[in-house]
Image (cartoon, rainbow, N blue to C red; front, side):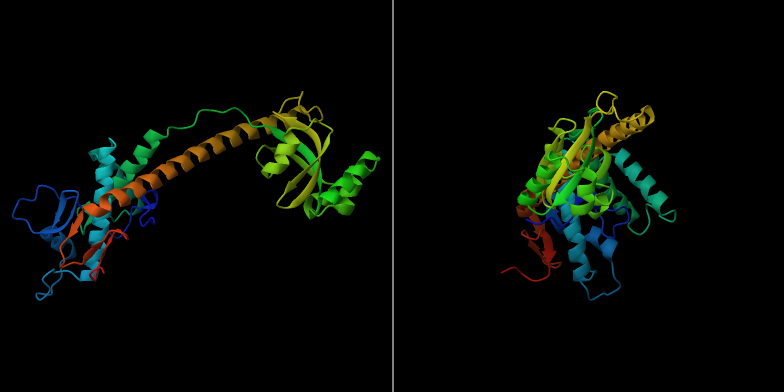
Length: 314
């Protein structure tokens, strides 16, 4: 089932928003219901009222269908969050008001549907808080390694073997790189790739380079071709691992490695949280689609698309 409304991407100024209407009384005319939660015709009319006395729904069917589709979705998300122990609280509402007022100083929470806009944003904030609770921040992993190397990029294994044979025969690496390398950037510098933090190169390149001893020449194949790599030094930024570098260079590399490790750990956490939100949404679409009822004045429920359509299905 496709994802129709990514929870993590919902903005504070979304045009369609949510009211959860409960306890409306047995005589209330129900426009929509999801898993026992009802939204009344009166509430819909209050938000989408028109001056057309001949329109029994008092709202254009297209607008009502769109509105009710979003109402069902966000109602289902709130219900699912509650099942998982995360209630939409007054604190979420207060944060939503603060965010939306900061984004638009003219925003008035209680005017023109502003209260429901606040509630929609509060549901999003609750979902994000739930994901943060489920996937806490990553612990420190320590600094990453650095690789100091140079390479010659060629098109085939046979060419790589020929370059390696020339190096074994005493040819100078830098001259061969200038003459033969298909990488114009490093080739013009004699193949020099500098000293870069772990993760900067493609995986096959690094797998070969980090397992080689300093001074060794190894060959790795990647999507770019065949790399003939000379490993100058590798490992954490210490004098023992990189004796050719001075203290200032090592300090800079060490700081860079720590920052890179922290950023990558945080990126991994964010990716995991995002995936969790996608899975939450997929569960909502699957679990709640059969539990929706729509007054036919406003359209017909399509569980496959998880939205209200204007024409009868089938």
